[in-house]
Amino acid sequence: MTPDAATRARLRNHWSIYLEGEIDADASKRLEQLIERRQIPSASVYLASSGGSVPAAMDIARIIRRRGFKELPQSALPTH
Image (cartoon, one colour):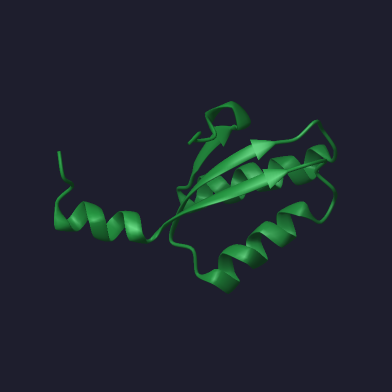
């Protein structure tokens, strides 16, 4: 099934953001800067972290929720 014009337009503006590695104190700030700089309207955010700063991780989660982005674990990464 081929997506309609509205769906195609929405998907063109949908990003995939990959966050990998230990979460440091500035991780949420870098994510917010990336979103603002690139003017990302919609995104799936894939997380692959073994740990790090709990407050920064909570800030990242708030950013994702506030913007309506979809949060996915590393296991959900698309494969080709």
